Length: 167
Image (cartoon, rainbow, N blue to C red):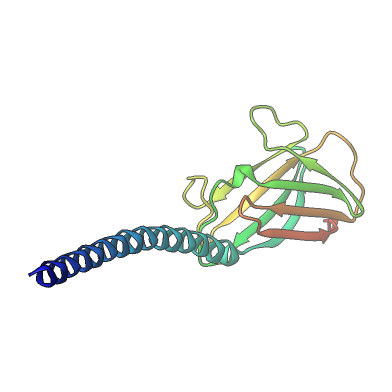
């Protein structure tokens, strides 16, 4: 009878160890799967932003000087497949080739700063195929040839060198 009790207790202990092992395996796998899900979500978000920033394509169209505004005007077109958001947070450099300077976005006064005007829906979003005019207000003399560079918040770059054609 002793052997029978010992055999039954061994079976019970093995069953308890098996149940404990299965429970631990379930807990471990659910913890790992939740972390994998979080990583997958982050990777998808990062990949989407990278694709959008790579598809953000602005191009220089034309540069001129508007005497009535006392401002240089640079026309830029969105030739990409995605809209460009928060253009006012972009970086603008302008000046003579080899010595350009930073211009902040105009908040209220138009002195040594830049602003933009949309030719389309005025919603501060540069939609695909939309053209904008960037007005650069400068208080010092800038000699030709001119250098213009725009860097969007997502890192897309538009730059050009140009001269004004006399009329």
